[in-house]
Length: 306
Image (cartoon, rainbow, N blue to C red; front, side, top):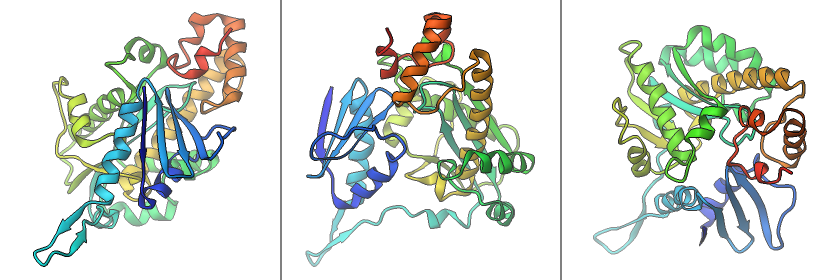
């Protein structure tokens, strides 16, 4: 499946920033970048055209299509002038106690998917800001290993881990990556809410799909958390989501170390060309069945195996 649409300058920088850690080494002619998101190839051209190719192309594209509509929506006033609808700002949440969730591992061939939900009270703001809490992708692994244990001692949290063997059994066209993420987010949020009667104002998730699709994905789940605020780049702007991002990353790093010890090879993160070489070594040494226990086999890396 291939989906192509043109994006505005309002959205272009957001797209460039979002995929900066997922870019491929080679860039096609007239393209700003090409990146991989799970089993979807994303290409942004100098013309402003954004192309999605893969089995989940429609799902990944719809996130940006919905955001494009939000960013460029107009209201026609009575005098005939136009007013742009303002994008929801994170500042609205910086003075509130919130529950937030975020995930790690969905763009990594090796390692599990880790989703964490946290509750952050306004009383925790000074503590977290002094630690330097922000989006885990903008912190070094060394920094995360230092501050995550401190956060976990003070901030209430619940973490849900989906191992690769289970992921490979569950993943399909009907159970795509976004549906899997939605179910894991819902599970972590539900379990956190039921630990204690937290006095929160909002529940925030970093937006990885449209609100409509998210609720469709969890429709069959018996215990649902509703009334969620979906915000782009929330992990760098809402402290509860930032904490969730850091804790998820910390646990993901621990699991990667455990898997590396199992195969006696340092497992690379991401899904780049360096991952292909290690995947082939593991298959040759331990067999395909073993590889399926530590890797996501729907990724393009698996199709390159001999």
